[in-house]
Length: 501
Image: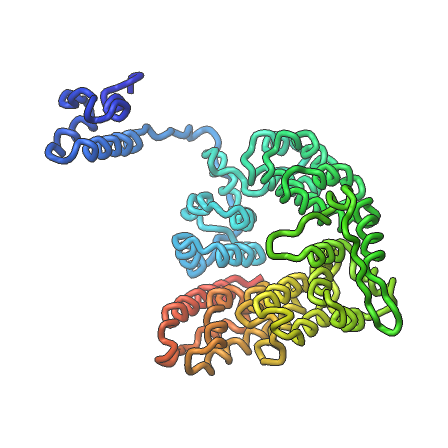
């Protein structure tokens, strides 16, 4: 194409002002003349599309020198044909969750991806799935990736390499964040230096996400950088900085918040809690988050939550020599019970505690709706469940499934149990599905988890899950979802049958 060819002039000047395209040469000219009678704008777009396709199709393919670089022989055995068929189906449907599981199973079984599927694997956009695939690409995989710059490795380079420095300096936001996270795992000081060097030039949204990477390998050496974040002009950056400073034992921020909290909450035996909030705070306290509340939140509520979320829960037990149940019972007798409970719930991020989780969930279950509305109770319960270890989440969800507990609701609890589910939870869920007979809140919760269960059911439950089953007519609108569930489970079952460690 010359500097401003006829087709470009047509697009630039507009079809009403541009010269007649009758003499336009090449494929685009043929298309324009063949489409005479159509609106000029449509002819122009179709001609441009035809030229783009023609140029792509007519590109000369590179010729590899047979005497040059060749792929080394593979040492891993290729995966069985049934697994290859499953991989093909998953790559076509781009089912990242099951693909990642397939690659992990292949890694344990020491099998590799068939060579004809390698280009599809390299075309995956999900970095986590690509990273899971790297151990099963065989020797041919890295060799093939070197032939196409777009097929680079999915995992971030080691912090000490020139490539890592290049990615941090020149990569996109997600590439840079991955490199920073990788660096924090292997060389926290180098990662901190990277961020300190570019801090002033980063956009606010990137400063917040990059600062959150310091959670890996957090140490007192990070305090100075976190203090910059605490004073940042962007609220999102300040939030990240406060959270990490609260997680940093001995930080100046943590000490200040603990001192303020102890001055606000007074414990009197036997089991009386008194709240004494000041009318105002100084400028330093405002920078620490004791500022104006967001819309719809009271001033006292906002301050209490801010204070309590920054103090580890074990400190209250030590200071007041009281159990979580005693502290929450005392909080219920004040005018600030819900705010106190929310602040303590947020403090679970600083260190999880099963006794506190149990006490908080029981407290919210007892609250009347005029004190704590149902939706807020659900949100608070979810925030607590998210902080518990996977086995405890599963145990609590099993009790909710058995109707022994009510918070959070079943539809919110099931997605929070990470895969794979314990076998008992899987069997109970499958049995509950088969006992449904009409629409209800419980039916919606159970059937709404079909996609989650398809990838979370453990190997012991897969055979049971693939047994033929039809939903009763009142629930027939879920039949398609049930069919997809059984298809996914069937694919996973093949992976477990064919890929033995």
